[in-house]
Amino acid sequence: MRALTHPAIEDVTLTQVLYALSDPVRLGVVRQLDRGGEATCSALDGGRPKSSMSHHFRVLREAGLVRTKTDGAAHMNELRRPELDRRFPGLLTAVLAAIT
Amino acid sequence: MRALTHPAIEDVTLTQVLYALSDPVRLGVVRQLDRGGEATCSALDGGRPKSSMSHHFRVLREAGLVRTKTDGAAHMNELRRPELDRRFPGLLTAVLAAIT
DNA sequence: TTCAATATTCGATAATACTCGAACATACGT
DNA sequence: ACGTATGTTCGAGTATTATCGAATATTGAA
Image (cartoon, protein in one colour):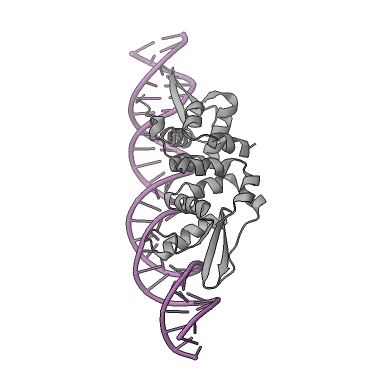
């Protein structure tokens, strides 16, 4: 597939991150990635169409929250936690704590 | 003027807060309120029309971020920091630290 | 009570986002 | 190569949001 674009961590903006996290679906994805470590796209749809999930993953990717590695035909997603913790100390921790 | 509605802090949702903070104008307002303590609406417009600012203040109010007290003809706005810190520990601190 | 100052509301416009089906691309196994 | 599985891209439809001017309250002061 086409190369998936990931911004450098320095180019990630706060407003972009906050916006990406402000959607319930995406916030749920982030929560699950934080717990499960990593997952494929289809493992995290809640019965939603693939096109919808693809959209949300793109938003998360472009906001710098998620890194997608192509693993065969599947796409493995992981939170860019260490990088984000350096960039915005305490932010992800607080958000993840807030969703319980 | 009409009574300005403020949600109880328990009714404030994370996604609402994150969305409200994801706009550069509103994030700037929050930053200034954090530093200056409180301010009128017109004190925080960046040359923007009052109707636009009124919109943004409404979003901030309804998200539970800002409390607006009517003080004569003017409206005094303040961050609901203590309440928010209880509701979402560390969140506002991290966000405010990120904007420097 | 008339005027000036402050802010909200209304109406219109433009931009952006969410959702989903359908078509397309890629990788792997047979 | 063919078929299957996994995601992405495209296009359309709907909804939400930002922005601004104009009109409308509300307050305090002359």
